[in-house]
Image (cartoon, rainbow, N blue to C red):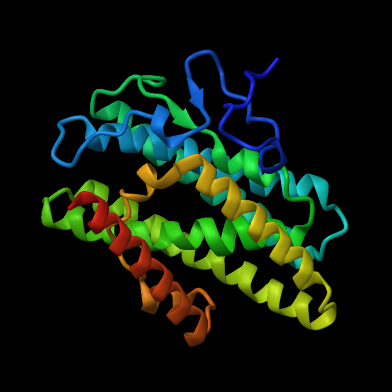
Length: 255
């Protein structure tokens, strides 16, 4: 039996948790993770451990969509299958980095929000809009920032991992964007389901991270890469405005 949902969270926004073995402590809110300050000697290791779990959750979400939408276009199903393979590789890359640098699996709590939120999204267009077009796109911005940091630190091994992940994320976002645009043209009412999914995910994300978690936002929008991933100039400008607003709040809280 799974642990009860954190009382701060609305059950309408969160499904059942993903399965994890007894080594792992899975938490529902950002505050219950080990959130280390910049410069802490364990910060990178904790990130690798947390990111390993996040990549596994993306794999599980893509696989779940394959299982639950067997009548989807064959081309889309193939893209989802390729994404499963990519995310499995990302998961293994972070596991390898973490263990090779002295980590023990289960050493830190992991956050289960991605899988649980997607469990409440019951349309394929909603799944792709939340997972690929939103969570993966935010990850693209983050990994672009991380590549620069790794290179500046002289960590070529880590920069190579991030480079490969960045290339994969562009493809994952682009195939979702292309399919969503075709589906919206074919069935404009599908945009209602997409909007409902995005609104649900936004509520779940806010409850998970709260204002305290939003303070970790420190990178901007990777505009060129988002263009490659199929976003329009207007969409990218909207992302820039939203991101700059978040960063302004983070700076205000820090000051």
